[in-house]
Length: 120
Image 1 (cartoon, rainbow, N blue to C red):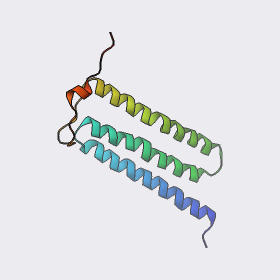
Image 2: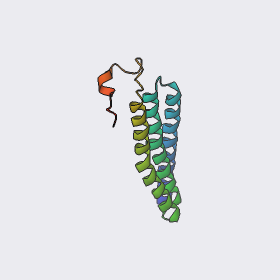
Image 3: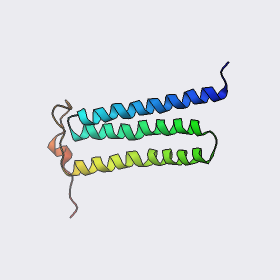
Image 4: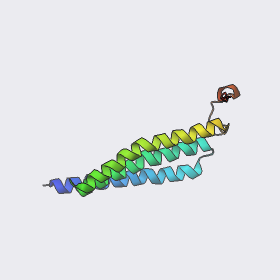
């Protein structure tokens, strides 16, 4: 019969391995993808998905302690700042006029869609 400790251990290692696999796949995708926009998406998946799963697995390993609280604060920080930083980088690339590579998408972004009026 399985004990609660064994179930928590299995769950925590499953989350850690799943998060590590997601980071590994995202890292390969980061170098394999053709343009900035696709790479930005891969980087955000690595940050948001993989690291959160790894931290949750570490929380189950630590049990109910101060370490778990600190890990949860780190996870909340990553959940808030990861998409915000990705949005800021994407917005800066869009303002600078960086276009989508033709190989990465069938959708064409028209020039007039990218024009942003400058403040005078």
